[in-house]
Length: 254
Image 1: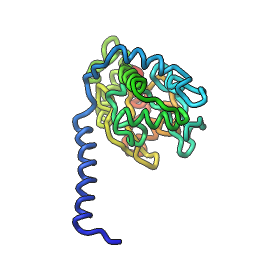
Image 2: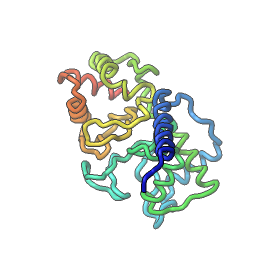
Image 3: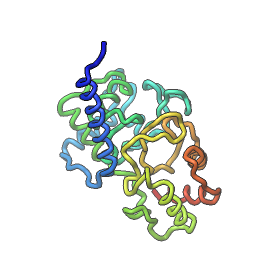
Image 4: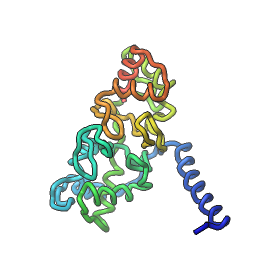
């Protein structure tokens, strides 16, 4: 069946509209002001976050994969743990500062936190149901999680003294080569990019990145040095061994 010119034009306009919204969000950058939340809801959500009864069968809680709101560093496929680098696997993303990083999931397919929670309940929590006030409470708690912050860098990304010369030089390396996609203070860009992994994936925040690997959407890289070398090679960025060391030292401040 052939589509009319009007139908094709409407479809094109819709695609451009959706792409334009995503591009506009990316151009604006990550929000800098946290949402105002009901403290009673946040407290209620904190209890639900660690409650294994939330999952079908009582096998896991949200905190099982997101201890302290962060990441367990594991790779999952269809809700089951798999070795790093497994095809179709996805590394657990941190929930710290999640109010800054919409859209969500590695493919940016969840436009809102509510969409991401729905997916989590269906897959990771094995078809669990959460509605009404409890659903609002869980989402409020997740939105209350602050971004990871060691207090070692200013809002524009510059290191706060005292700092090693290597880390200060690493800031210059990051400013030149990394801030296009990992812009301070959120160190994230709200679009997808291909960094040499064979597909376009969300740009994760660099906040707390040195807390532990593996790295990449499927956990294919075991440490930061390997990750930087692989991405630099794929993006044809020339970095010396010293610059890689300096960049890692800077990332340890975040």
